[in-house]
Image (cartoon, rainbow, N blue to C red; front, top):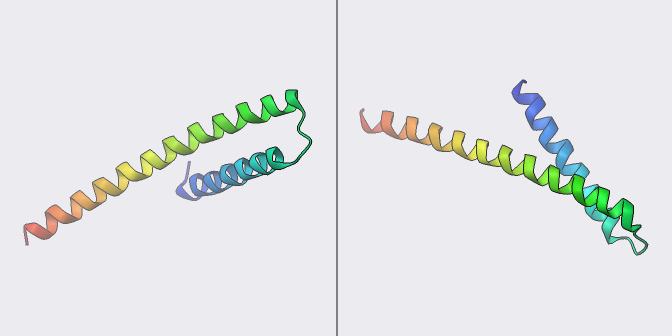
Length: 73
């Protein structure tokens, strides 16, 4: 998967999660539909957490790489 697809998917997932949150903010919420949406929201949050963790790890590695190379100069 290319970097562009990962970013796009992250944005799409965030948008979907925002739609779910907006749906819950409505006054008339169906219980069965709410359970389905809650489960989907939980799945999205899990994926987003993993992606953010991956990005954080990558940033840490990049910082370490460039910090160590600047120290040796």
